[in-house]
Length: 350
Ligand SMILES: [Fe+2]
Image 1 (tube, protein in one colour):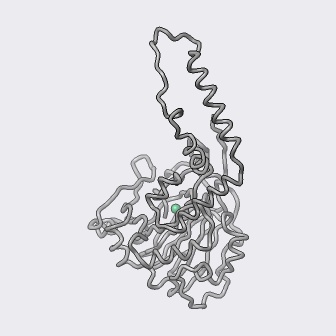
Image 2 (tube, rainbow, N blue to C red; image 1 turned 90 degrees about the vertical axis):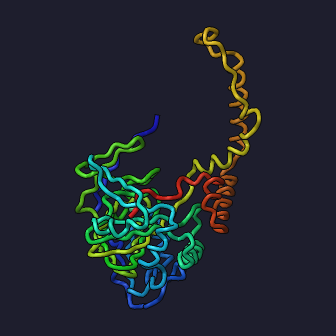
Image 3 (tube, rainbow, N blue to C red; image 1 turned 180 degrees about the horizontal axis):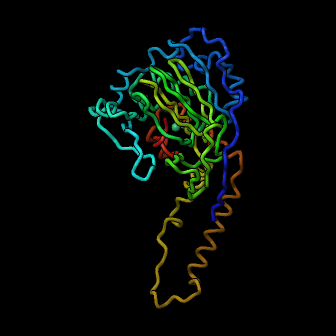
């Protein structure tokens, strides 16, 4: 039986806001070099104090991401992105979304809805170059990709958390964010959204309480600003007049992915794939057929021997293989099939 844990989020904001640092460096970050993206924040401090631990807001300057992506690029990408959708709240208060065609974008914006284009980096050279360079600074066995959000005034997604870290790059206009400075959930197997008017959410794998509004940090992102959120940080956002941003999703494989990758090739044998025998219903009592008992016992013994033959260093080697695969190729479909990556497209990010 799966363990159910109850988490509550009550902590207050701490000193994770770096806006007191000098922001007048004028350095472009379109190359994707981590130093430039985090500038003026220290990358070593970022990895030591914030990566996977705490949210970080970095004040930028308007030219920081100039030339990386814009509204024209959004419309171009809308024709070839993985998914084009708008979010809404259904009749029961649950966040939901529906897919749209590119020619519906003006209509949706006119109705006050945020349009999300998922995986916009495909065939966008500036974004591809950025991601390739940015990924060099990370050892993450997983895929980095960009989603983009175009919002009219006051539009944005409601309170939720994502199962992977994200970095939000503000490109045009402004957006107000509310977020928890630390993860509300430490272990996250899917994105979690709160329906309106509900303070406790019971999921099959966890029960969560809505974080107190006063506990959330609040910041307005302007062009050039960056907001890093570890996986599991609560957040919601709302555009101020107009907003265009990129969300850099940093996905990674799970332990289950690695174990499957390690074991499945060795279990893909004729003996394991052979169909099990069937029996006349009238011939079976409460006892297990001897034939099945012997087969199950010998198969489980093989499985035990196989598992015992693995060591942590071998799993680490497979983890590194996944990392190398993702580093060296675009691998959207290939990576998913080869490593059982949990998911390619986030269904609820903002
Ligand atoms: Fe999100």
